[in-house]
Picture 1 (cartoon, rainbow, N blue to C red):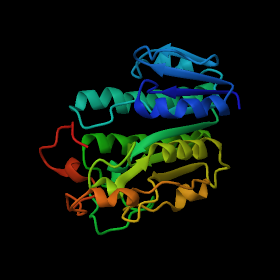
Picture 2: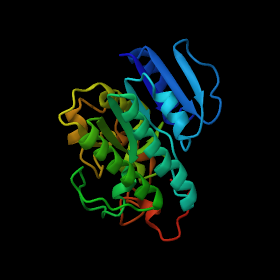
Picture 3: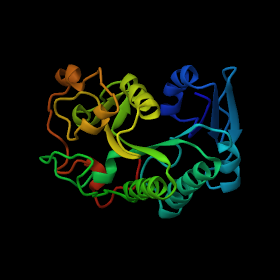
Picture 4: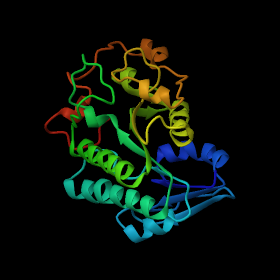
Length: 260
């Protein structure tokens, strides 16, 4: 394929996926607010903020796909959420439409359904129940994706990503963990699969026996997780979830960010 624009290019998930994107695309344009070090020969850095619509539109020109990883990834004051996750995500979808991009893969979050009970199995058809302003901003992003797919024919895949870490860090993550290799496989599937529909919502989680979320729609894209948090279960004395809700601490009334 030709070119891909990656927002949030200085983040942890982008760093993990960049080598694979270099295999899949002739040009990888990295959009970031700050420098990200040494680039591969076919990578190009564009410095800019997601709130700068003109800059985002410039970066999207000539791209085949956009991988939108940028934005605030935790709870924060509304003004910060507004600029990073609402204005920024609007700018990405608008730029993609205007530039004739074929597909946008949007990093949503499992926190769009965080207030579902831990004893409920959730899939992409379950009602949204965001647990934070952050989660609500991801609902907005998914709705923008639906609009752009229905109205302007953009292909959109929304990834409701679990907790992506090298290994589970607590007992809660025995349910929510997405391994780094599985995250790479998930993004690749979302970028390259023949989509069953123009708009898709999929949960990004490893093959954890205790997971809350269905992987049916992800499997329809060809995603086959290879890792499981079950291999780490013996490391945690208690395996009970810390909250009655799937969003964990994000559901607490006083939660203001900083704890995963």
